[in-house]
Every structure is written in structure tokens, then in C-alpha cells.
Image (cartoon, rainbow, N blue to C red; front, top):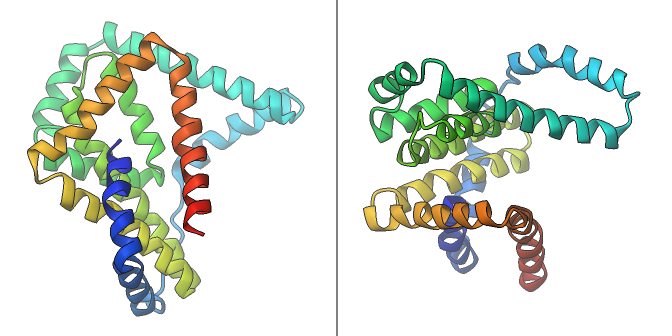
Length: 235
């Protein structure tokens, strides 16, 4: 919901002024020859044998592999939540409260660094979900952590784009970074505005809990129907 709020604020501004695209293009031109790098992905190395083994077991049938992968994902999330509730819950909560998530700035920085290390914002967010379900972390702590993860995922993309020395690729990577940073600078400093995405998320979470079909409808609406409609209308 924070990203949706960012789009609602920045998209009209971009359509009216083109400021974001111009700034991204300027940064892309400025940094295109500085050189970049492709970071090694330790998570991929760790999981690749299991992925290849699972693919071999199902004879590399994509539909079966997808079903098994989704089932394993849900099963592991349920298992992690149960384990967190039964093992060291108080100790974990104290550690997070006094160290990693003590302040919003620290939680945001931790989210950025962790995402940069694993090169995916989905992984830190997915790890945070069972922590919240087990009661280890509060939504107010996960909120800045998720924003940091949004920023962290853009950093590896910038490094990879710089390695191509392609102005268009570098500009796109910087546009991604600028969108996330500017959204945070606009929404986060104002407490009343900052609380809007959280309030909407809480309401939608309760709604989805009562009606399991709602998350599917949300994905179809926000990730397919609205973007396709926007592209059609803008052209």
C-alpha cells in the first residue's frame, strides 16, 4: 500500500512535469561509464542443488514444479511460525526490539542492507511475515524495514545496469531508486500521511482473513488490471 500511495503521488507529477524521468536520464548519462558489477548471489548457490533435485524428481514438469514449490512455501511459512512461537520467542523479541528494530531508521537501514546482501526484496519481506505472525515483530517495526527493502533492491539493479554501460538501462535503474527514495521522503516524514498505508493494510488484512479470495482479487486488480488500464488510457 505504501508503493500504491507513492504511485498516486508521483505518477501525476511525472505525467505533468516529467521530472522523475529527466532526473533519471541525467543520472544515467552521468554514471554510464563509471563501471558496475554483478554481485555473487550466495542464496542462489545455497538453494540451487535443492531446486535442481526437485526439478529432477518431477521430471521438470513446470506445472507440477509450480504446485510443489507453492506447497513447500506455505508449509515452510507455517512451520516457521510454529517454531518461532515455541522456541525462544521472548529472547528473539528482546533482541529485535533492542538491536535491529529499535528505531525506525535502524529498521530501514537493516532492511536496505539485508536486501542488498541477498539481492531480493521479496526474501526479507517473506522472512518478516512469519516473525509478525508469531508476534515477534509489530507492524510498526516492519513498516520501515519494508521501505528499506524497497531501496535495497534497487542498489543491485544499479550496479548491474552500470556494468552494461547502457544509458537506457542505467536510467531505468536510477528511476527505480528515485521512485522509492522520493516516496519515502514525501510520505514518511508526515505522521498523518505515514499512517495511511498502514491503516489501509490493516483493514485489507482483516478483510482478506475473512475472505481468502480477496488476496487473489487484489493481485489481479493491482498488478494486472490497473497497470494495463493505465497504459491504455495514457496512450
